[in-house]
Image 1 (cartoon, one colour):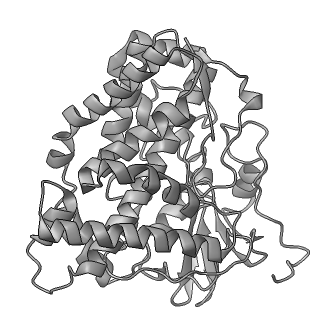
Image 2 (cartoon, rainbow, N blue to C red):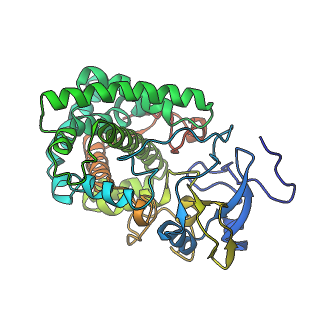
Image 3 (cartoon, one colour):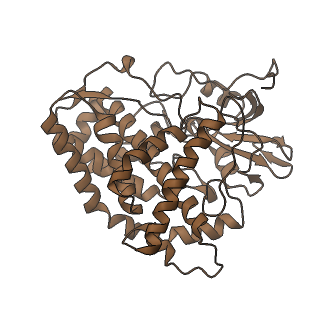
Length: 399
């Protein structure tokens, strides 16, 4: 690991309040929204914290996702990236081509058509929770299995393999392990997905993999590897992000009784509340990594070709130039164009599904369990500082 330069400060990670950005990040943003910083790997890079500057970075074609170092892991090793269909690790022109193929299956109409199934899944899990009685761990019994069931249904993952899929997803999202452990989890996922693709080719169903197999493919790119890369990326990302938002969002609402009461008394606020939760809890806690493909100016700073840059979207979503009183959690706030789903070419393709899930989850949770409350003080909760996406490891609740 390289030795950090003395006068280049480390990116803040410690939080006095678990629901607010790391201490000191606001001071960095106020002093210089584009500045040098030292990351977990020991490498130095540019840190971008201002809202407008992050948006400019994420939409600029002069930055690539093919970074030479993994800034947020301890060893800094960049594992082998998947190829066509993976989206997250693709640049132009392949990214645009592959995204168009996948976007046909993530239309607003198709996502809205999933509402009845999502509602059924949510209700079944709450039935089980009520039958068990409190206290329960809302992460284990609800936040993790609900999005896992939703995305598994969408991709046609057999029921008997879903527990294995959840284990793999957790292993792949850790940042406190070496590259070998992450690669081992990736190999397990690859084996599961290869078998799934072969089954869908032999016996197509009403699922996303089957739809992609039969989609119009003039360039002939939708082969087994494309299907495995697309399914793997979307399965992991859609499961883990939504699970984190359910657990962390529930913890925040239960910690803010005034906002909880507003939502419980007026369920029509749920769409508004979800947007404020997404902004306030922006769970991509480390930010998106890029590398400059040419010399470029960003926020008045010259970034040289080959230099790495991190878009700190959490800091950007708390920029007072973007939203008034950003540290005030207010579900009646007029929704603002937050960056929780990213921005530009790599904006989350599944964001409409995530919104629908979260709206159904929080409306139903508070309707079915109106006296829901924390069974442990917030100070005693374990937060996911060791994972790619921020959240809670467990959430003991009762009612």
